[in-house]
Length: 86
Image (cartoon, rainbow, N blue to C red; front, side, top):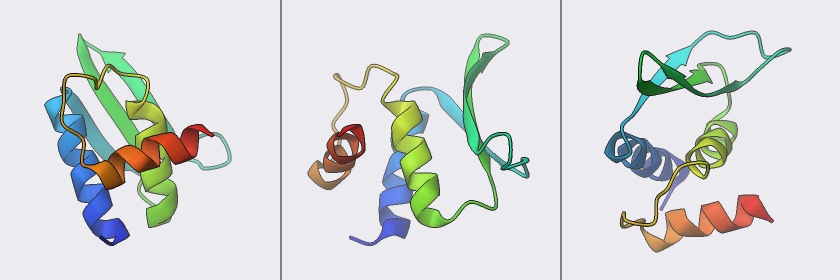
């Protein structure tokens, strides 16, 4: 499975968790993005200029803050959650 497919699976997981993803131009000097709650909705802002690997890492880092225990996460994607945690 390549990184593009992993990103797609992570985005699908975010949707199942009720997270709306926004790829926007941010100032990387200050932030690559992050999860926030706005008007009762969970929103994840990601710098659109991030490398694919960094986008995956940010998604995993932010989604790990949420309860994913009731959802099926493909083993390879679950492995990402564990690897980044270490």
